[in-house]
Amino acid sequence: MPPVIDNKKCKGCGTCYANCPGDLFVFDKKQKLPELKYPDECWHCGVCRMDCPEKAIRIVFPLEML
Ligand code: SF4
Ligand code: SF4
Image 1 (cartoon, rainbow, N blue to C red):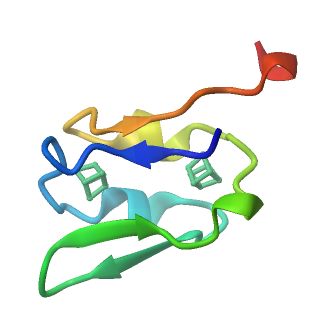
Image 2 (image 1 turned 90 degrees about the vertical axis):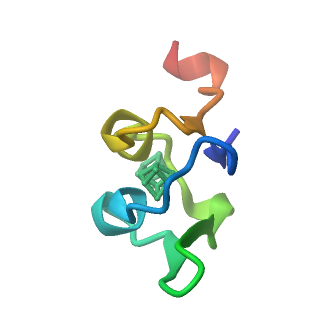
């Protein structure tokens, strides 16, 4: 399952947007809201989850990756 952002924890730092190697996020700078724009293209590298300082991103990794 592609990353899910917990909007209650997210502080809008933009790190997920900046660091996703696939540029799969868009970021609303005014509202400080990231959104995963292309979830079907996510290959579960885990960078967004690892780099989020608020631990606001949850990823359910596909079984074959565990
Ligand atoms: S890295 Fe985490 S806190 Fe920062 S914008 Fe993304 S989800 Fe929000
Ligand atoms: S898991 Fe990797 S490819 Fe998928 S959205 Fe996060 S940083 Fe991008």
